[in-house]
Length: 351
Image 1 (cartoon, rainbow, N blue to C red):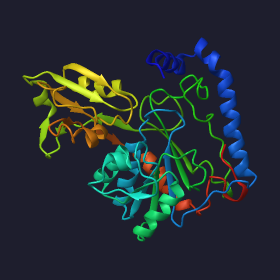
Image 2 (image 1 turned 120 degrees about the vertical axis):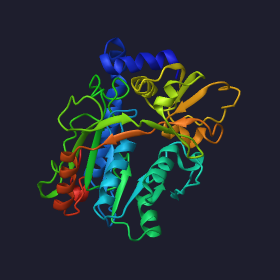
Image 3 (image 1 turned 135 degrees about the vertical axis):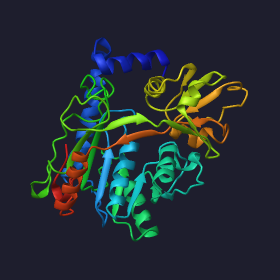
Image 4 (image 1 turned 180 degrees about the vertical axis):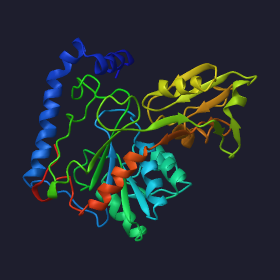
């Protein structure tokens, strides 16, 4: 897509205008097709599959990075602190894997995807990637039979995987202009009306905000770490980078690069230049000459690929804190759970 067209659509996703009107007919077709998919599950023409452990799906109905990855990591850390043994399954977007593939510390991001590699390195729990999350979950349980919970990175619309709890993540954009793709940023209409067994629909769907809380739900706190790290494991306080004799150059191959750049500036860094790259950018074309004479700063996700070419780049971690009331609600949902799914179980459906 041409950058100017993409920029116009992105603006329309926030403010509406003529672009939204022009794209609305396509949105109607998109909505009809997704509605047919849900109807097929309701009618039993398509089947969802359950795993033998509780499944928590973390996803978003708004396109782009809303904070799924740090939310998955926060949920996993909470489960670990309670003595559970969770595992993570993910689509592994951007990876070349053709079948369910376990992620190791040394897995190439090109094979398993940058976000699954980051989640495995940060959490230490088993991670399996696969286009079919049901198959990925089964593969994880085969490899790690002591797993007590599966946390699914993304997959709200992957109805084949039956889930027990859904965590819908929003950022400061909220619902945007409220329209479905491509006229708006929503993959599904909001709110998602759930119909589940035993009257558990409300308690099994948690809404988490990683930006301004414009909708009912819980609000997570986000900030950058005060220390950066390079591929050798060396650390440097951001206050030291503030006084660097070399110009600071920040790169971000994430859904919303400007948020990262703004957070760096809020930490007192003066950025001489920035590169806003496409999400999941692979950095294969990166050369040392390109960034010569500069201090290179990147996100943790980008570091999984950039360090192969530029090991002295400084990665600045994002810290996200899940609020206690959110964790309490998650615990309550897990305790009350009868392991009947909210995703089309035995004729029940989510809209």
